[in-house]
Each structure stands twice: as structure tokens, then as C-alpha cells.
Length: 349
Ligand SMILES: O=C(O)CCC(=O)C(=O)O
Ligand SMILES: [Fe+2]
Image (cartoon, rainbow, N blue to C red; front, side, top):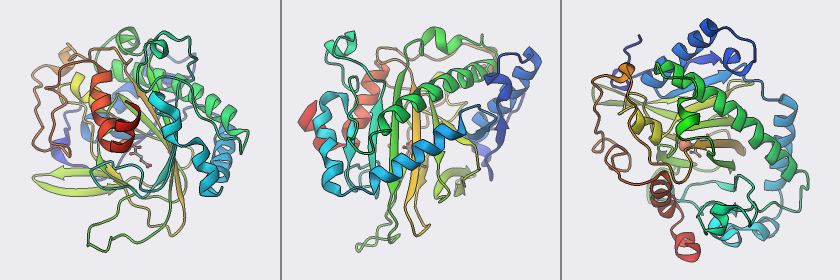
């Protein structure tokens, strides 16, 4: 077993070919071999690049093209689907400065999407936050179909990667599907980070996204050529920010707070941030694959995690422990999103 842990620090993020998990006809040994690589990455940095994932390149470039066309529209057209109009479903467009990931406005604009649920869906009928219909722009009109097709493809890939993560923890391949993701919470965002100065007039650095960890289970990030994503490595009290540059045809995969909680900190939800220094727009497409809203997320019992006990609250960006909280994943998530969109919280929740 690989005994690396985040405490050792790291200087690069591995590239893992996940074909054996996504194809239909791989051997158990091949699946286990991929799972072992994923497990080592989750222990070391909580991040890896997935290649050989099988998500159609044509769909991806189509989505990229449509996304650029949307952000190029006049602000007023983009605001026609502003988040306040998405109500409790928390969908739509937010302008630059509209989101405060770690207490200060991020320099990014974006679109929020999620599973497309009609008014008859039980969670929508019950008024559950973050569940409902998407707000799609009128232009470019193809964005709706591209987003829905992309979310479907990434949902399938996430299930496959979670079966690898289960194997890496010496669990049955359907461990997560059986407990948490039969009906996953799927959130998808399209971000545009415009170029600009690194530092504000008051001397504070300006981030595209400030330092944070992801809240859920697994994030799959598509990024364009611009670069700027950085991952926090810590070695003996020294912090180093490791670049996660674009790797063609890959998704950057990272684990979120719920997997950190389930593994008692052995698989880390590692802080990361973005600063766009490319001198042009940077686009990214993070896809979040999370436990169902009503799931109570519990520590995993597995020999692979024997002896693990973590409370990292004092080190975390938000000074909160993912291990101590009580409640469902929905409760946890709501506490987080309320902080990053304070105005919207008052308006719609
Ligand atoms: O845009 C990126 O590269 C990262 C975005 C991110 O970290 C997030 O949305 O959680
Ligand atoms: Fe993130």
C-alpha cells in the first residue's frame, strides 16, 4: 500500500489513464491497478489528471465554443438569466465579482447548472434548495443540449471513477453507488476568468477563485489552455502552491470534503485557487459529483483506513472541520453556498 500522506507534501499531480474503469471489458487486475494509482494520488495530493476517460472530444469542443459565445454577449443579455431568477434552484448567470469564495469577490463570471428536474420531482415539490430547472440562455441556442449531454457523460464517468476509488479503499465497487450516489447531487458550472491585475488597490491579491476546498465528493474539471489553477502542498509547515497546468484531453479530478470525511482525512480535500495570468480570458468547466441531498455521510469502515483519525479544523481555509459536522450533505452544502452568495441567500432561501 502507498503510505504517502498530504503531510509529506507533493510537487506534481499524476496523470492516470482510467480506461480500465470506463471500458466494459477490462480485467479485475487492470481495474485494481488503476484504482491503486488513484488511491496513491488521493492520499498524496487529493488531485490527479484523468486521461483515457472516453468523453467525446467533439462534444467538449462544441461546449467550449458555445461557452465562449455566451460570455462574449453584452452583460445585459447575460443578466437575462441571472441567478436571482433561478430562485431556490440556484441556477443561472452571475457577473464578475458576484461570488465570494473565501470572503472577497472572485474575478470570474459564470453559469450555474445542475440536474434538470421538473416541477413534479419530489425534491422540487418539497422546495429543496439547489434542485429544479436550469436557466438556459436564448443565445447561443445550442448551449442547452450541449450542457445536458456533457452533464450526462460526466455523470457516467464519475460513477466509473467512484468505483475505482471504492476499489482503492478495499471496498466493493458499488460502495458509493449503493449508499450515496444512486441519486447523486450533480452541479455543473461554466466559469470565465477575465484577465486583469494580480493585486487590488488595497494591496490584497485578486483571485479568480480564492483558496477553498470543494464541498462534495468528486470534482472533474475541464480547463482551457490558459492555466492558473494552483493546489496547496504543505511540507513541515511550509506551504507551496503547485501548478495544475492544462494537460490536453484530461480532466483534473479532485476529492471533496465528503470523501475527506468518509476516509477520516486519509483522502484529502486539498485547498486550491485560481489566478489567471494568461492576459486573456480563461474558461473552465467544473463538474461536481456529490452525495444525494438527504444522505448522512459517515466514516468508512475498511482495513485500508485502520487507525485514521483526523481533525484538521485549525489548518483548513475555513477553520471548520468536515469531521465534526452533524447533519445531511444538504445541510453542509447549504451552509457553504450561503456564504459565497450572501445576497442571493437572503433573496431566495
Ligand atoms: O476553474 C478552476 O480551475 C477551478 C474552479 C474551482 O476550484 C471550483 O469551482 O471549485
Ligand atoms: Fe474548487
